[in-house]
Image 1 (cartoon, rainbow, N blue to C red):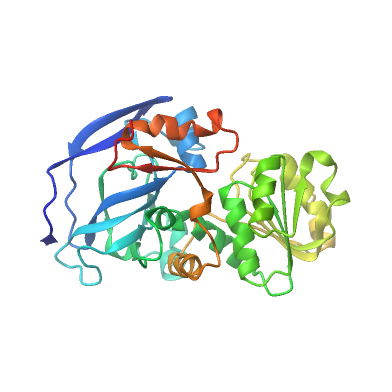
Image 2: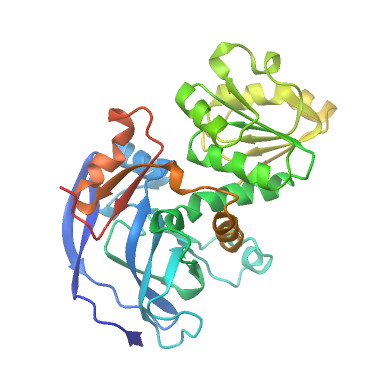
Length: 349
C-alpha cells in the first residue's frame, strides 16, 4: 500500500436519529487492495440527505443505526491499496459513490446501477462522505482536471444523474425538451439537453426564483405551473424529463407530450400514482425511469471541464463539518437555496 502521512483519527458528522447530527471522532479507514483513501474536500447536499435527516428513511431504506450522510463528494487521493495501479497519491478525484459486484447480469450488461448487490454512500447501512476521509474502489475515484474546483468536482454526481437521464431519453439535435422541476438536478438536466443539441428547452416549476435561474442558465422558457395548465403554456415536446417527483407535475406532463415522445421519470415521488394509459397507447409514448446512473462520470467531467455545464454557480452556501445541520436545513432559512456544500476538513464556526 502506498500512503502519505495521514492522521489516525478523523472527524465525521453522524445522523443519530431524525433531526439530530453529532460530530464525532472515528478512526481513519484503511484502503483495501483495490481501494483508495480519499481526503474529502467538498460534499454537496442532496435532497436524499435532507429526507433522511427529516424523516429517518426513504421508502424501504431506514436509518436504524448512526449513519454518515453525504454522497456528492470530491477530494484528493492520500493512499492506494496494494493492487491499485490506475490511481496515484495526490490525484484530485470526483467520487462515484457506489460499489457493485461486477459479475451479475446487470453489471455485465453495463447497467451496474441495477446490480442487486449495489451499495451506495449514505444509504443505510452504508456511511457517506460527511467525513474527513473515506475509502472507495479505485475505479470509482475519477480524476478531474485542475480547471474544476473542488465544489464542481463534487457536483459531478448530480450532473451524472442528468447525463443518464438524457441518455435514457435519447435526446437528439432538434428535439424540444421540457424539464419539470427546477431543483439542481432539473437545472442540470436542462443544461445537458442543450449540450446534446436540443433546439428548445423549457423548464417548469412553482418557484419563481428557480425559474429565473433556469433562464439565466440558458433555458428558452420558464413556466410557472401555478399560472395555469401546462398544456396551455407549452407546445408539444419530444422529451419530458420529470425531475420534481410531484404527482401533479407527472400527470400534467403527459398532456404536452407529442406523439412518440419520451418521458423519463427522474425525481423520486409517490410509490404509486395514476397515469393516462390511453394517452400512452394512442400517442405511442415511451415512459421509463432512472435509478442513479452507470458509466456517466467521464462524460459528466468532460462536460463540466469544457464549460458546457457550469457547476460552480449552483452553489448557494458553504458550511464546515460542525455546520452540517445548518447545511441540511439551509432551504428553511433561505428559500433561494439551491446547493449547499459541506467542507469536512473545515470548521467554519
